[in-house]
Length: 295
Image 1 (cartoon, rainbow, N blue to C red):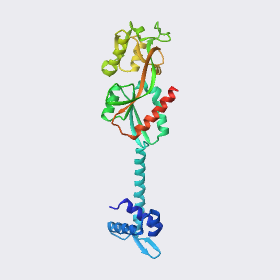
Image 2: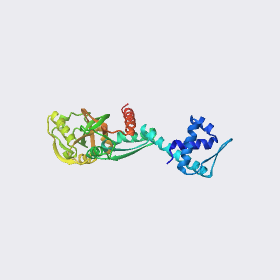
Image 3: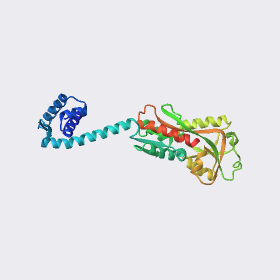
Image 4: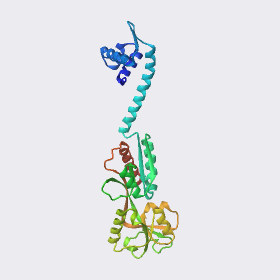
């Protein structure tokens, strides 16, 4: 099988019509080119060049090889370009899971900016639960996630945003017009929260938050998602606690009142051993987008 260097030498000789000129073009000695052509002709099994005092010309077999050699070299160059771009983070598929509770604020500008800055990166996004996001990162079906902190040790995280947390009250609630509330102000309320099994690390953190506020919440129903919790609040079943940005998930029936000294983080999550070059590009873009949002 001919080597790429032999094909490059052959094309240069054919285009220049001279071993001497091809040697100058390739910065190779004429003796080296002659040896390569003898080896190439032996591999092909037929003469490729006709030598004369005026230079070299192609044989019929050489003419066929010139066409094919140019095609092979062009494909090889495109392939190396793709590899080089991938190494620079410009050619990759990135599978990104995100939580619906963080999607509206960050995901649209993040996707737009990634496409504008890195058109070679195919960003494939998927709305998932926190359990699906962590599981996908661990088994490799996802490359990155945009989430609340998963509170696990085997994944790397970088904080992108911090946003206010609010008490979500049904319309007509006596506290709906307060400028802000403390979590302890809500000790006597009926609560709707997600199922404890949905992500135990989060619920362990919730337990600590309520304990610091001096009470255990009276949970009357468990929801399946932020949208479901908002529907339960609007129906008057109970109150809940969500990030202030969750206001975009429902138009009416609820009121958001900021909780003093409480914030929720939005983080980028990835496997600690991940080496995808596109991930570095995404982290840079995510920082920029988050900075623009908070500016």
